[in-house]
Image (tube, rainbow, N blue to C red; front, side):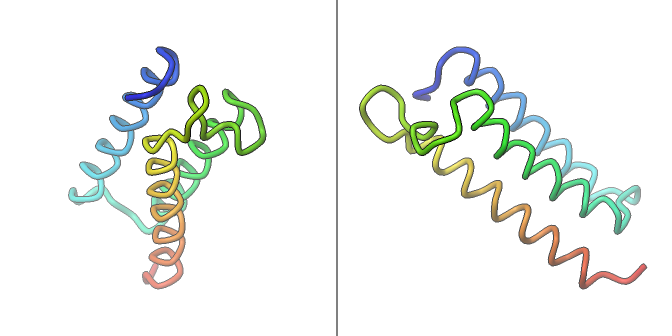
Length: 93
């Protein structure tokens, strides 16, 4: 994957968290407020990368080269956060 062992484990746990969110979304338990939870979760995972790797663009590097898995996952999480925020504003109470 191109991550350290710790980041690899966190990446897998993060993926399981997103799969759990998807499973909740397709059930009757989904509520409008959970869009905010989904957006917050996605934003926290973006912040967590910088907490573990440092607050700079170096967080996206593994060794001397860009890590495409880190970039792809953070872009996807940003899309989830923006879309969840949009869906929250567009859904009815």
